[in-house]
Image (tube, rainbow, N blue to C red):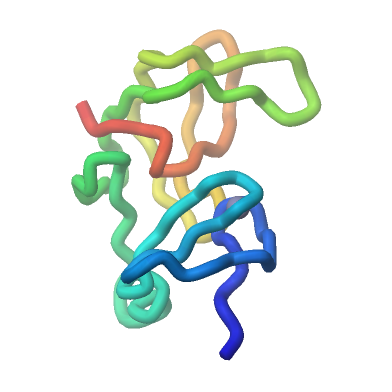
Length: 112
Ligand SMILES: [Zn+2]
């Protein structure tokens, strides 16, 4: 039986822990239920608390996020207005004051 690769870092060393999949490389955990319903119907994107996000929502960042390829850091608590939901690994497109257009992962934000 083959387990799915980690949705966060792409690691293939995923293992099962009860009803969850766990990635040993980035410590990401996700449920098997979520994995199997992916691709069915409309995609629902949820924040870190499981609240469904919609285009135009305002969210805050729940942890410091380093921007790849730069020294910029999006600080925890940063408010992000008017998000746009997109397909992909980073499922939120947005514009942050002082940084500009960027992509975020919904698991690192919280709806305001
Ligand atoms: Zn991982």
